[in-house]
Image (cartoon, rainbow, N blue to C red; front, side):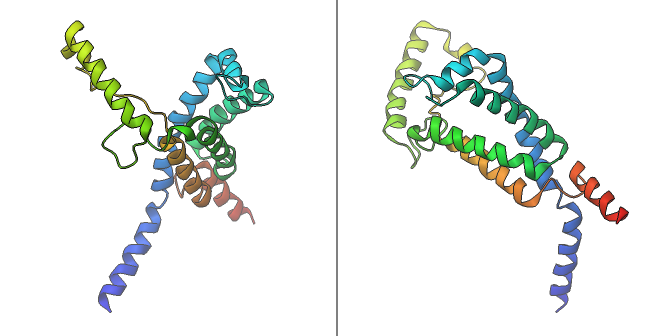
Length: 198
């Protein structure tokens, strides 16, 4: 019985820090989304061309509108996420953006973002990448300063699978369900002020 009371007391204490998890998700996602939006904005004409071209791009209708929506969603959405304002509302278009990215850009590459032939999730594309990476390393070891080239880390092949887009979607879904977080978001203080006014 005493253990149950201690457990309940601990759970009561944890509720005072339950805003830290949504804060961590928001702080993690904001720079990722800001960078994605900034990249699209800084190369906007290329983004529009990629969105619209059916041969080497996404073949989306109204590419100018779609590119503008993507840039705005990522830049404005990330900024609002960072401070925790309209958190649940802004999570919705960001989740849609992640699903569009997953199913128009990444799905045909499988799960893995980085090609790892040893993974149980490796598909034929990932396994073929292993041979290409091994050959690239041989060429660099023979003709380049390999130690200097790898001094910042190992070479990898980007597989560009759905891993990151789906992971970000799940993180955004968590934020959508729990909100911006107690004590850590503008939403919390607005709700608190509104409850005091009533």
